[in-house]
Image (cartoon, rainbow, N blue to C red; front, side):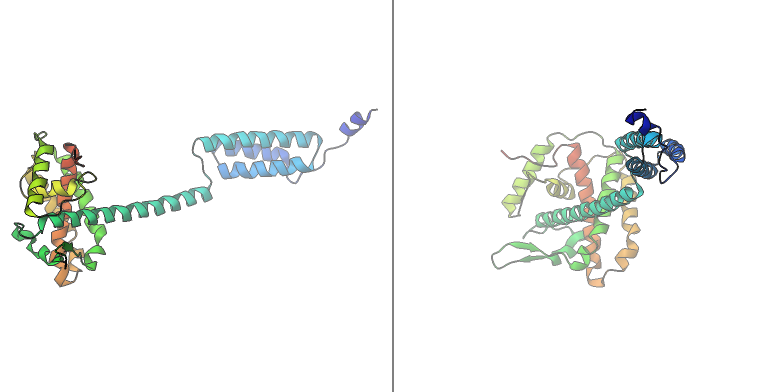
Length: 284
């Protein structure tokens, strides 16, 4: 008898688990798309493979290979372990939080830009936003400064919700068609503001505050099909935050309400600007 024949005739070593049971478990886990279970089967099969020989070793090797293939297919189709899923959810939540903070900051920047257009010295301020004059001061060098109270900034999430819902309302309201020469009209509005001494900035990056000003002043009417219905929905938005407004200090309450209305106006302006392709205003 040769050495090879003598070796093959020796009995298999006993593995740490029953290989047949491991094979049956793997089949069940493949059917259930159980990634964690397949990873355990692969690890156990590889452990047996390292400590056995003969038939047990061959079976363990086959099970480890099949488990590896099944794991690859599950991952290719988006499979995750519970730990991976939990970490992904945490990452998505964290990133969503960052995006929300950035969106709130962008809206506050837009509100400030709009206030610079509405509150410059000599501006024809409408009576329904006259309270906002309290936010405007002229510094020692003659520049208009806008200071939004902390009580408002702490509630910038409410302003952002109002802006986003306003966008949806106007997007779903339906338009009577595009207005002609919108870009030229918008440039004329900007020129008039510059001539009157207003600070007009960043039009090539974001023209939405200027569009909001044009809508506010009636220079760029948004022709929608159901104006009364839209007005009712905007009123409902304001009433939906009535409880939160009641919790704002009395001296800031009216300011917040007016800024909330301007956030709704910016939502209308965003929709109008997208419709007429004037979210930015390239300058020659």
